Length: 137
Image (tube, rainbow, N blue to C red; front, side, top):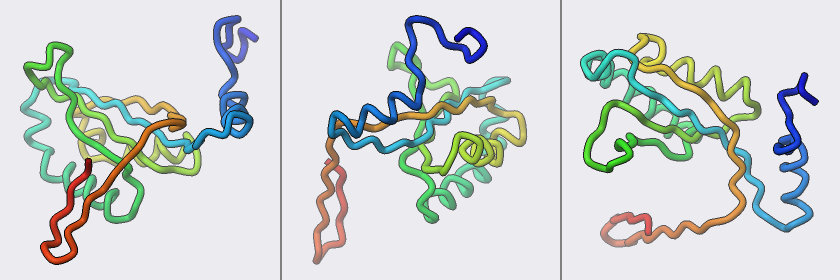
């Protein structure tokens, strides 16, 4: 087991994927990109326009599930960290998508990608037909 990075305290990911069927859970596998500043805020500011254009493309093509900045643990400030949740066919594909982000290409941010299994939760969307107003509840 040690060759696979497993200990007696962890479960193979394949087992987790199988358990969702047994337990009747959603079992939607997504990928979370944790991204953090490598050299302060200035390189992030210098690449923000290209980064946001890339994010918009991921959103428009249905690759992005959600994304946004992450506050520091105290909830009082932001030092450049963010999180992007993407749809991909594999961890390798998810890593390639993350690597293509202009923030990562430029070196302004470093990143890591982890599979995430969405099992529980809710989402509600309110759409005003006449006004076109949209709201995620």
